[in-house]
Length: 376
Ligand SMILES: Cc1cc2nc3c(=O)[nH]c(=O)nc-3n(C[C@H](O)[C@H](O)[C@H](O)COP(=O)(O)OP(=O)(O)OC[C@H]3O[C@@H](n4cnc5c(N)ncnc54)[C@H](O)[C@@H]3O)c2cc1C
Image (cartoon, rainbow, N blue to C red; front, side):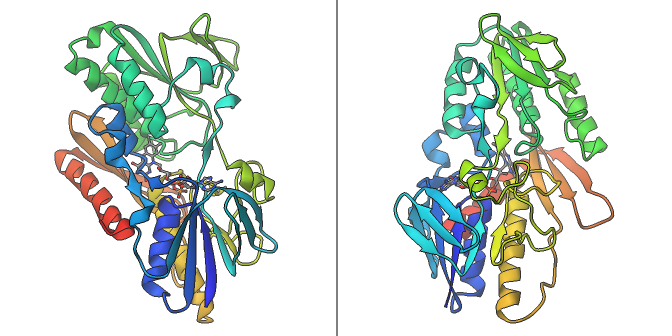
């Protein structure tokens, strides 16, 4: 029996463990390790932020995983030796025949001076709860959503935040008293696709939300309430909402797995340069968007590659970096972006909707995975 150790029980780790349990339960024993006791979908942070759900509503507890062949350990990974596939945690140590690193991307709040003290965010559950409370007391002034680095998770999420903020203030009858702006380093909201970018820009314009492209936000001056730009200028705000700088987890960097900040992998099967070590999800250096659907698709390819190798076969379907993301336009309307990064000569993405039917599809997307991964 082979021992597969999966580090990180997010989109990638959960899908991989499930797939191995489905297809290789007699050949593989899986240890799945995560520092947290629960998972939440990235987009459910928007539900918390706008009071549609509480934090406890969105948490899916790892204790509920009941699939055969999966052993969940709530431990923090403290060291990884990719040469020997030896992993140390705060609760023990593990030797893997096959090691899969799926630890996602961390937020580097300290990379932007002033942000930790003077800004808020909705990219974590705790941050979304805090911002929900701050918003309740915000009656007038300028909200600046600042994208502090690139790449970051879920490229449309800052714009979804802006569109939903518009709804929030319309509902409170004070939209005219609030200015909403988004600033970031990209030339367009979703750089791989002009069509999707234009739809987002149109939606922002219709609601009187300004997008300021090509801005490198360097630091917050929390006395003056302005963001200092790398170019020398500044943007004023009353409330600063930051999309934090993202980085591979520190334990991954220390392991020597990362190069220039992210983990290089074979595009076809997500193998690292270390034998029997894969990396999948947000921490890879692949030139593509960081999103759960791509992490999940990558996990399926890793499972297929492990299966093929166990049976002395070749991987049949290489990784395409394909997936379908939902995008909230506000007022109950949801669009769907179908993207494929590596399946053709160049990346493609197209927008379906927005519509109210897709809002129902999005709910279905989450419940299918909840059932599949947690059996509930
Ligand atoms: C506001 C928002 C909206 C989003 N919307 C969407 C969307 O609509 N569609 C979509 O596809 N994606 C969306 N995303 C992005 C999505 O959540 C991520 O891209 C996805 O979770 C990445 O999956 P992953 O498995 O690579 O990493 P993660 O899901 O982040 O999982 C990594 C896991 O590793 C664990 N971990 C990290 N370090 C350690 C350690 N040292 N020891 C033990 N465990 C550790 C973490 O606890 C975590 O559970 C959104 C994200 C945000 C923030």
